[in-house]
Image (cartoon, rainbow, N blue to C red; front, top):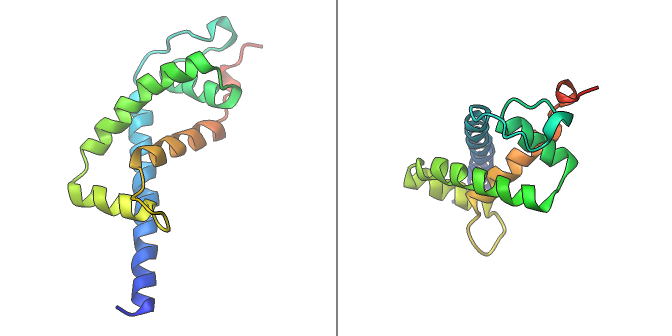
Length: 130
């Protein structure tokens, strides 16, 4: 295979993996938005969903006990969505995520990082009690 074709294939795989990881993160976000807020931040924060609380934790934390609770909530959601992928799609994502690494990439870690990035960038000012 020529170097140009090899390079083009890698670029396509990276673009695909970026788009697909973002899509998986959005699916997890949608599920979290459908879960009523637990009220862990009390009256200081008017969250409506677990996603709102997750964003608050991402921006104001980490709070070790809350971080563990969010892991227990989010990790199974991520795993479920990854399990829904076709084997070939999962392999392509793992290969693209592992570029330059000794082992294949971890899709769950990539989705988690994407979730964190989206949560950190979210404007939460409408949830604050003044």
